[in-house]
Length: 506
Image (tube, rainbow, N blue to C red):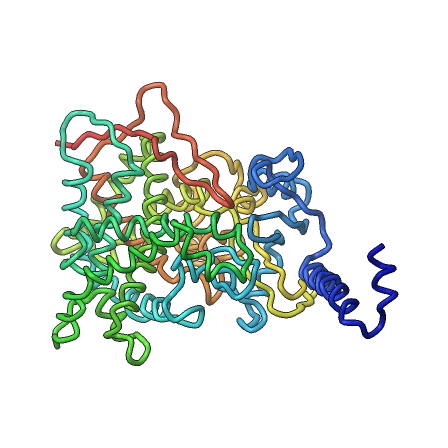
């Protein structure tokens, strides 16, 4: 027997030590893992289950538990690790804690075996690592304050994008929003991200749009290898070569533009200019770093925004009764502008459109969870609940957004729901805006780490919708219902095959 053999050689035999060491290490690892787990019920979906499960999606698990007890805490098995679902009542406490105790970026890095995005291999990580906040600072301190400055550029690019991606036919024409809007958002966003030198370049558009897909395709094959083997496995996992090739392509495309920008004293107002000004010392001229920044911001903005607008297109087609009230509001606001051209200030006065956007997002979130945080040290909440070190917690934001105690008749689409909630009460005005964050609406996150680009995204979406609503009619085929969403790991996306019908207005 193994134990008898060990005891014969105990206590100093190298053979005994060699036999016991792996056992001791395994026990220590298991103890470490248990310590990071909150002792609460655990659930799995059929997709990830090793045994039978009655749940098809994470959404199913959260809805059942939320309906039973909205304050229930439980774990859900994910491919990379268990994630603990917590109620929104803990958000205020957690958001006040420093990043040293509660961190929302840890899952991106490759600092542990239980990571989600494998940033080192997917390239879905800023070139300076987790502590590189160049893009966040640039968005907050340069992009957002200059939203008024870039309005004309956005409008010009949207006119071009509609003409080339949607068309201007005056007969009813089928359109697949997921496809056309992906390119439209890439054109419009690219105008602000990298400038007019490249944003209409087909190679740039392909690189910017495919990079995120390529990065996520790396995760499943690389997860099959233990952490210690991944630095070597990257060389024979073919998926790893695609993000690297995209970085090289972006470097090649960006090189002449970067050289010209650095040599010029007069630079355009766009993200490339602002990123150069905010880059760490010595990195403004680093081609790899600047290419990575462009790919990072494209990943963060283009897919989420195009998915959001696709949902709105589907909702407008499914509820055409809102088209005329929205048109009337746009025309009314245009009359207040000296040249009849909408400005940044005009965007805030499109309250019905803002409400329609928020209602569409409420029922069609990009992610079913939000306010995700990695616990860096044992934390005891005011009610005595302990979140142990190494646990990852997240909030069921989709369930909160369809809670009848918060939103009456929550499953019914009401495009003016938030318009009515805002009313004339100034106290409600900020709370129910599209970009507002609070415990009842956590899609944008909460606190200092709330999505920094949401103001830019909101303006971009509104300008696109203004063009659509003023210049096109939109509908579904007679007898058809809104295209159904497809559920992913932790979220949903609009149906890529979903179709609407468009007609240019005369």
